[in-house]
Amino acid sequence: MEQEVSNLMNTEIWQGKTLADLLTLEFLASAAGSIIGAFAILLLGWVVSKWLQNRVSNLGKKNRHLDEMLFDFLASIVRYVVLGFTMLFVLNTFGVQTTSVVAVIGAAGLAIGLALQGTLSNVAAGVMLILFRPIKIGDFVEIADQMGTVKQLNLNFTELADLSNVQVIVPNSKVWGNVITNYSANPRRRAEWTFGVGYGANLKTAETIIRDTIMADPRAHTEPAPFIQVTNLGDSSVDFLVRVWCDAGEFFGFKADMTRAIKEGFTEGGVDIPFPTRTVYQVTE
Image (cartoon, rainbow, N blue to C red; front, side):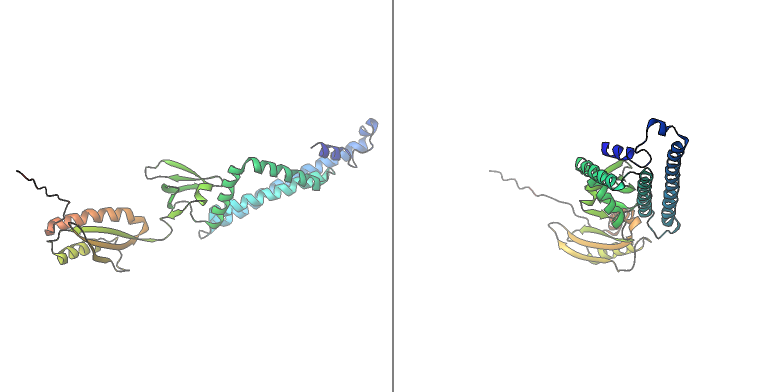
């Protein structure tokens, strides 16, 4: 900074000026002109940066197929780039060597970067999340053992609302560095159940109850066709594996409702549902 102040005092405006020269109207007019010019450049840069930011941001808002969050991020970058060049022009107005200013800023940036490695890793991860968009606002996801709906995604953290609507803040470095399970990425999901019936039960009757109960629900998709087959002979039960497709938004309710409906269907149809039993033999002398 001392070097920059020295450069400022050695510019054409100030160099070789005595106190009497500084008080002349000519010099004051020259200095005032530089100040007014710098202020005009600063004001123009500020207005242009805000205008460009709004223009870029509105591109994402006008077209619903575009990611609004991505364009907000790009709009911020555009604004700060314009403001950065504006400051360089302002310094150049006073005769400051901008190349040395850029060098000072670079050195300061390196020192700040080393001191804020953890924070900058979150920012870098936030940039990657915004650019590649593995998740977006409104998605139901599981990240770093946290499950919830994405409420906010910025450069530092990702905000989730869990199943109890409790706010969960996950640093972006944890998001980008972990496996992301996005339950909302695809419009359809496949629900899966395992239903066990007794060895004495009529398997054809059990299969018919399962098929008719599930396919009577409007949430069940007929294509792809449901999978209902005996897949395991357990210690005390014959197990049916059932797989049916539904809309992703109806997955949890559909799966819970069908679990209860199949149980009730088995009871009404006389299909035995086994439970673990243990036989104890007592030997008496």
